[in-house]
Image (cartoon, rainbow, N blue to C red; front, side):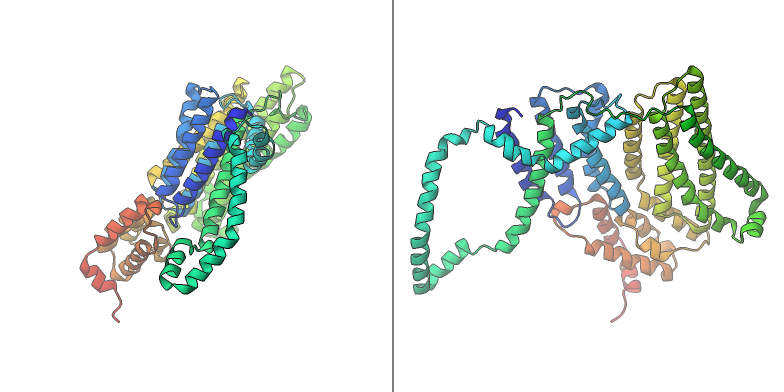
Length: 490
């Protein structure tokens, strides 16, 4: 590591630790997280600029990922959406760190991405140790010229401690005014300082390791390369053929049920068509998702001995992708039946969104396989992932769920009040707008839930959240008549 960079890096990390402790103590994710994400990304930009690294046109958008999803944590309040936003934020920072590992974001392979991200995460966790034990002793620090005077001053302070404490204690016992002044100056609550010190220390440690990883690039060649076992068409083709047969058999049975309708399903399984759809949807999503790593592993391990073997492999992959696509069509059809019978929920929305990401990934994989050009696969998958999470934020999942289920209730369908009441404040304006059109037996529990949501969140500015603020405005917009009708008489 460059000796002159040690002192600025330590100061950067310490400043980020203090800022992180100050910004994350709002009681809930909100504006503080958004500010910290922007500040941290700015620190990384300064470090990379110091190294003279430039970003290509295909990589410029990546600098906006962490600040954007940090802002999303101050925008939406859905717990599941906040988990996705936090994951996207950390993934964006991980992709920024890949460049120090010598990985091309645009053309990097799956193994390069995986090993590069794992290495960057390990450096963030333990990188501060070599900074303190190796880089710091070798660095030409500007404050070392003050070492001798500082040592003398420290000895003097230690020698002065005993007489100052003795005389101070005597004077404090002699005069209550002096005692109160000393208590005000030195009566620190060490118990309250410990959590701040721990939080700031952890953030500073992780920041130092992450930034050091940017300053100490790995120059060893092929570090991110992982040798494949180089399997032939028989070793790869038989597993692919087996899964193709299973998928084909399942789809053949599905066609019988789909064309036979609800009566055949009820006669064969004892389930209604809606219950049949609910039982199978998530299993189909899981099967579709597992097909992605299976095909990636097959492409990574396969080493064609002849052009004919390569053609057979492409045919198998194409057929497998087509069958997975058919399974996803069946899953979507089940989801429509599922929603029609039971309404919309978070897990149904997020599972469907995940399936759409799988569909795009498999489509790109099929195109790359047919063209024989697997490059840009991971880059495209990352872009689709970020875009999907961003779209879920824009759509406002909880508000969409509330709007759909309330529309079902208006049409005379049953309404799950307990589930609707558990939605986050993202849905509060939609729920508040529909209270007047609902029966009081349904409206009052929703109103009480809305009131509880607006009262239980912290008021600290660092926890400020757009959805919570809108929920408070929706609460204040409810009429006094609704308050009187729904507030129990005591």
